[in-house]
Amino acid sequence: MHIRATYSIITLLLAILMAGCSVSKDRFRLNGKFKNLHTAEIYIYSEEGRDTIRIQGGKFVYEKKLSRPMILTIQYPNFAEMKIVAEPGKETKFVTDASDLTQTKLSGSDENKLLSDFYYDINDKRGAEIKNSAETFIRKNPTTLAAEAVFRTYFAEADNIDAKRTHSLLNILLKSQPRNASLSRLAGKLIPFLKTTPGNKLPPFTVTSWKGETVTDKDFRGRYLLIYFWASWQYESFQQVRGLKNIVSPYSDRLGLVCVSLDYNYRTFLNNVRRDSLREHNVCDKLAWSSPIVKQLGVNYIPGNVIVSPEGEIVARDLEFSELRRRISELMKKQ
Image 1: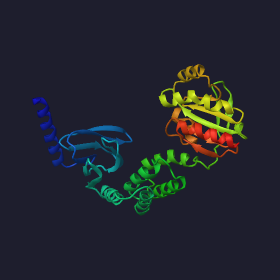
Image 2: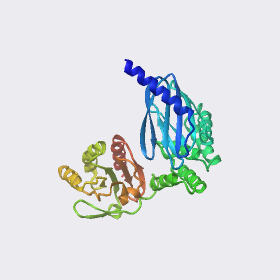
Image 3: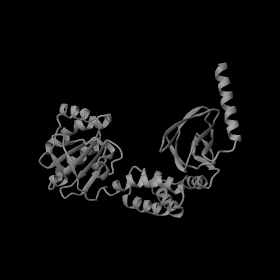
Image 4: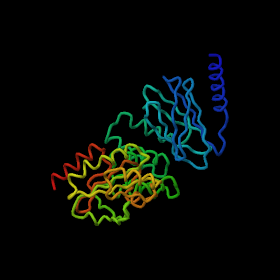
């Protein structure tokens, strides 16, 4: 008990000392305070990974070495998330109420003041109203990282992406921030996805199956095609790919299948395919996320899937497994 009390006192003293010091030019500091929360952990994500932050006495101080401004994502104990802008040499003050996270306030930099005002503005809005406010914010502040943070939250990372709207806003940001490397990397992943949403044509592809056969998009003209992305190291996708036989087999004359593995280890892939009863057109080039077909179709997570019509048009993608089963059954009945 005495040790725990001493640790808490030391932690509090360190927080006070750090809060009183100026921030060096190559570091960012986040000085946080929670109401109605004494002790907990939060996570802060960046392109470089995840940091775990301990809250003591409702307070925390987080510092990160930076060579350039970047967007950080704070994940609360209830898994809600909020983005902030981290800039070298600056400190941001963060105050919120654990019982009502919509009351979060940010101060200390122009970028985070912009974000704080935006978060306050959407407090009483829902659904389409929030999207409209987010779009207005981005169009008014296209040169800011705050606009990128809002774009990532409400468009790039949205559950149901509006491809046309998202692409339009992304182009505005890219034009306004030509030197933003993080935004350019996001565009490199997002644009292929936006170009392969339902209603778009399937781009031409050529792959080699585990049997050494060349497989192309042209092989499936005149019938539906399911492209499924999986890996031995991703349990959910591995279990699903083994269950595809029950979905595809009844319609084998009208529905083609290409399973693309993101395994790095070809031996592991091959052993799993040989044990599996679904061996046709299983593909693994050992390039995983760098595989041409993966990049062409903008696949950023697995399990993933794309359904293509007999005319080569994408009709659905990234459906939950139960919805995938239902949608294929529905399409086969119409054919």
